[in-house]
Length: 265
Length: 123
Image 1 (cartoon, rainbow over the protein chains, first blue to last red):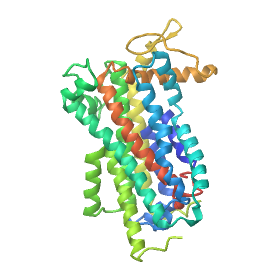
Image 2 (cartoon, rainbow over the protein chains, first blue to last red; image 1 turned 90 degrees about the vertical axis):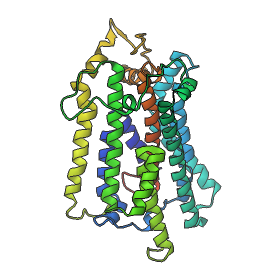
Image 3 (cartoon, rainbow over the protein chains, first blue to last red; image 1 turned 135 degrees about the horizontal axis):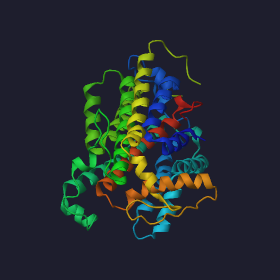
Image 4 (tube, rainbow over the protein chains, first blue to last red; image 1 turned 180 degrees about the horizontal axis):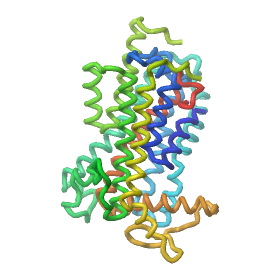
């Protein structure tokens, strides 16, 4: 059923993202056969272990993520709904990981009935995997660029968020935290406290994922660094990390095609 | 399940434990130290559970299970502060975060379907 990703997501929804991801990647590092193949010398794992076990399962990820995460996230933010409706949407949103899991389960069963999974070639699986990476990077970069534009351009902000004072936003006020190395200063408001918490949550979650990528990949090549920087510039830090995994996969597939890697089953 | 753990991996494990400890310290610990959770408590007044900003009472019945509903109101307060746009920097950063979360959610979903992870708690 591939229920574990939903389980991990539901855990971080309750006990914070940064903390849960540190345990997810710790577990991954020790228990995933892919990590065992990758370390300790940053070796590229075989293509066979990187491809989906059932190719159609990766094909449905974009739709299940859209139905289970993107849509439930967007609904409470629509201001034309009444306060009570939006609050009820927020209550439902707390279980978005379960919605992702249900969507993935239903859609993967439909896809398995639609396609004859035994006749699908590794090339098809690779193509679908690529499209899933592209889906993740496309949405992440769209939001990344939109947010940077909203902060940098008062004109764009006035159009999207009318009524917000032109000096209400800056890169410092959005991405800067009041925390330093010492004890944190008293928080000024509930909203500022929420922002500080979310900033830390995001930075730690992405940082531990980048740490895991580093220990899995060993010393990165110039090509890998270049593409990760491109990914980070276009789609933010999570985009950079996602790009790292994509580049790693493509290298494994290339080695497999050139006969260096093991044959895909 | 996975293969036996190779030797010399414990320094990396220490790295993950560093992330685990300090992430919790910075995310939740600092929230306790800077008075954030105390402010949250002040939103419970006279038997009402108020929303931040507008200080209007929040609906408190969602599942019918009292303890679960109590926790849900805390979560709803937290996210209401985001969508009410009372603090534009918070709303904009939260929008940004939804994109970053999506990126890593897609990665976790991909890891979940890989042949190499089948049968583990990753899949």
